[in-house]
Image (cartoon, rainbow, N blue to C red; front, top):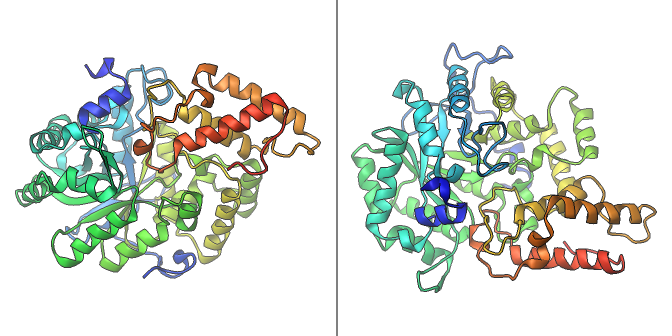
Length: 481
């Protein structure tokens, strides 16, 4: 059944006091946990571990995000949604990860068209249960799954797919987003949270499952309205609910620029500081912003290479995300073995970001911010569009032209005509005409799906205006984005 459903149908069926400046300079001193012997990386080092303060268990600083699993023929489902996941390769990569000290595996019922938990369970079940920690999520996004019975069945299904009797880390998934009822009534972020977890008693049920040992650590992942984030931490302070960990987006761009890039996002330095103040471990997602921080313009690459010729662009971001005290693990969705090997080497052991390097990365973040790219990390949560718009493809082409310095945004520029032609030809080649921005009707179905909280219909409108001006007379707005 899953194979014949598109992504939207499947997800809907499932239900789907702050540190000033760059706080890494003062608040994020090196915080090492004892490493386990025998987990040598290819570089000869050993995996770095952080201690879960509740259990005393050692968690690998690199966590394996199971959302971009390899498929038969190469690539991932993002590249080929109809492809079959390469279970043999998943097994090999998980074997390699465990052999080299990785013990935290993060999945979800929604990942990989609903196939991630099952594939992860097959691979992990071949190992001793004591060798790994598995994290998954309750993804009751759709109002059809807000009922108590439906939400409970989601959790039970996760246990079956993962072939485990208990989950080490269970997350309330993506709190802070908005939703709408079955009859179409719009709900704000707190009303949506209440509908998903409070009105149906599911949060209390999960707490009871934790007491029974079926959930070892209970937390949440945050995307969206910071008021919900603050409310849940207030409950922690009051003793109403205890959060064993919280998953947040943290990278050197989002540290101080997340809110500037999108006013509906929250700077990582605030989220991190609030967790640190309470001693709540942070699980880090999006250390590369969906690959954006590994795919920066050439002049930024050159700048980073001058600073450290041996370091890859991605390793800078991973070191940054792993440096702060209180970070339990840093998640990376690794499709290819070489990415897994490089990330293991980066954390075997971690070389923390120095104050001088921190200042350098803040300069890089400023450079990236001034590119004016759209903050899309191509997670494809917005897809498929009911009207066929290739949302990630449109944003990808626009951002690529900015990153490569090929935007036709100044008619007086000597290279304007070449850039104009390259943009329009590249647009038609990368996005079929019937799937381009001018066909967006602003229905808004994509908006609540976007973890980056991009106003997608508005961005589509801007791109449509930009493209039409280029086509008609070569005029462009001074600053559309």
